Amino acid sequence: MIIDSLMVKIALIGLLGIGAQWVAWRTGRPAIALMLIVGIIAGPILGLVDPERDFGALQEPIIKLAVAVILFEGGLSLNFRELRQAGGAVTMMVFIAGPIAWALGTAAAHFGAGLSWEISALLGGIMIVTGPTVIGPMLRTLRVPARVRNILKWEAIVNDPIGALLAVGIYAYITYEGPDANIAVISMDVLAASFVAALLGAALGFAVTWLFPRGHVPEYLKAPFLLVTVIAGFVLADLIKHETGLITVTVMGVVMANRQIYSSQALYRFKEDLSVILISGVFIILSATLDWETVQQFRPQFIIFLLLLLFFVRPVSVLVALLFSSVPWRERLFIAWIAPRGIVAVAITGLFAIRLVDYGLPGAEALVPLSFAVVIATIFAHGFSAAWVAERLGIAEGKGEGVLIAGANRWSIALGKTLKSLDIEVMITDDSKFALRRAHKEGLNIHQGDILDEAHNDNIDLGEFQHLIAATDNDSHNQLITADLGPEMGYEQISRLANDSQSKSRVGHGRLLFESGAEFASLLDRERDGWRFSKTNITEVFTDQDYRNNLDENEEPLAVFKTDRRLLFFATDARPAIEEGDIIISFVAADTPEERKADRVARDIERNGESRAE
Image 1 (spheres, rainbow, N blue to C red):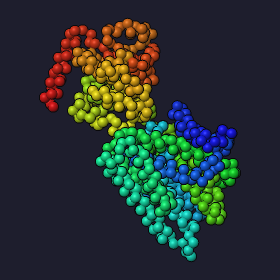
Image 2: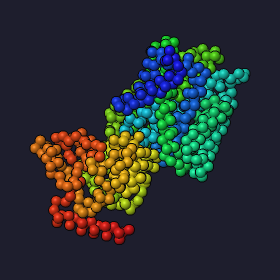
Image 3: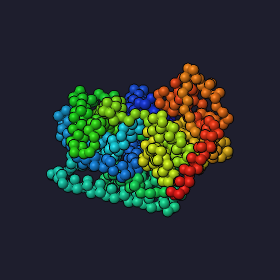
Image 4: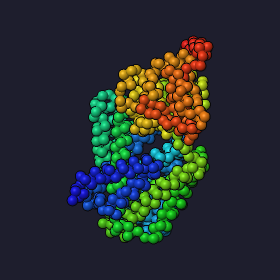
C-alpha cells in the first residue's frame, strides 16, 4: 500500500506536526497538547505511524540529533541581558530547586509508584527537566511578565542537560561492575566529561563568531555550516560520554547568543524555522511510540506518583528556592505550577529503560509508561490551565492592544498622540536619539534602536502590539521590516508607508497604509500645511456614508477603532467594515485658511527651536 512507503510516512509526520501547530495558532489551544493527541491518534489508535517499525535503528539517532538542534536553538535565545531581572531567580531555580526536586521526585517515585531506590533516583533526576520543546510553544501563546518568561525559559534549557547528566551518573552507579560502587569516582568521571563538553561547546561558539564576521564563510553557507557544526559538536561530545553532547550544544548556543556574528536575520529565521519543524516531527514520533503494550504496563499506583509530582514536588521545590528572591509571590505561584515535560524526558527515560531492562534490573520496564504518563499529565494539566492560572493570579497581560511605530517624525508622532487619546498604548522606535526627543516630550513611549535588531533580540516584545506601522523615511527599510517581522506578527498586522511611486507597484512587501497608498513625503508636506488627525464617531444618525460625503479632496480614513478595542487600518488592499459605534481616525486638512496659517507658524517656531537645540 502507498501508506506503507517510508517517504509517505515522513511526509505524513511533517503534515501532522505542522498541522497541529497551525490549528493551535488558529484556536489558541496549546500546541504541545494538540501534537500529543495527533501523534497518539496516528500511532497506537490508527496505526499509520509506527516509529520502531518504520525507522528501526535510525529512530534513536534521529531523535537525539533533533533534540540537539532544538537545545542549540534554545541556547541561542539565552541572552545574558535577560538576567538583569531574572538572574538571581534563575540561579536559585537551577542550584536550589533542581536538587530539591530530584530528592522529592526520588521519594515520590519510591513511595508513590513503588519503584526501587535506584530506579526512583534515575527517574527523579530525569524529571527535573522541563524542556524548551514544551515551554517554548506554551510561552508563545501566553502573555505573562517578561521575568516569568525568562525564568521558565532559562530553567528549561539549562536543566535539560543537567537532568540528562544526573541520569548518566545514576546509570553508571547502578551498572558499576567493580566490587564497590564508588560514588566519588563516578561523580568525578561525569563532571570531567561535562567540563570537556562545555569547553568544546564554548570553543565552537567562539570559532563560529570569529569566522562569520571576517567573511571566512559566505552568507549562503552560514546556515548549513552552523547546522553541521552543531551536529558534529554534539556527536563528538556524545562519543566522549553519553548525553554530554546536550551540554556542548547548549553552551555553544549561549556563547553565540552573547557575541556579535554580524550576519543577516535570515540565519536566525532559519534556526527558528528548523526548530519548529523538528519539535513538530519529534513530538509526533515520540507520541506515536506509545503502543498498547506500554499502556497496559501502567499501574493504578502510578497515579499517586503523578499527583505528588504535580501538587507537591514542583510547588515545594520552586517555593523554597524562591523564598528569599525578589520575584513577586503571584509570579512564584505561577512558576511553581508550570513544569511540563517533553521530548528530552521521554527520550532519555526510554533510552535508559532499554539499557536497564537488558541489564536485568527488576522494575526497569516501568520507566517508559511512567515517563509517558508524566508527559501526558503535565502537558494537559499545565498546557490547558496556564492561561487560566495566570489570569486568576492577576499576572496575565492579556492580548496586546498597543501600536508600534518604526520611525520618529512629525507625522508618526502626531498619529501616536491621536492613538494615545483613545487610551491605546503607543511605542515609537528609532535609531536617532534626537528624533525620539519630541516623541518623549509628547508623553509617548520610546525605544532607541533598530526595530529589527531589537525585536529579534527580544528587547521589544512584539506580543504587546496589535499592529506595527513602518513609517521611516527609507522605503527599503520599511519593506525589510515588513518582510522580516511579518512571519512573526502576521502580515495583516503590519502596514508601511510608501516612499515613492515605484513602491506602490511592488507586491509582496506588506500593506501600504491608506486606501490611496499616500507617499511619505506628501504626508509630511500635508502635516506641515496644517493637516491633522481627526476622530469621528459613527452613530445611527451619522452613518458611514455621511462620513464619506463629508471628506474633502485627498482626505481619507486611516483606521477604525472598534468597540472591542481592535484597531483596523485602511490600506490599498484592506477596507475594514465600518459599523455603528466605531470611531474612525482620519487624516484631514485644517478647517480654515487661518487655522492652516497658524499651524504653519507654530511648526516653524518649533522647528527653529529644535534646530538651535541640536
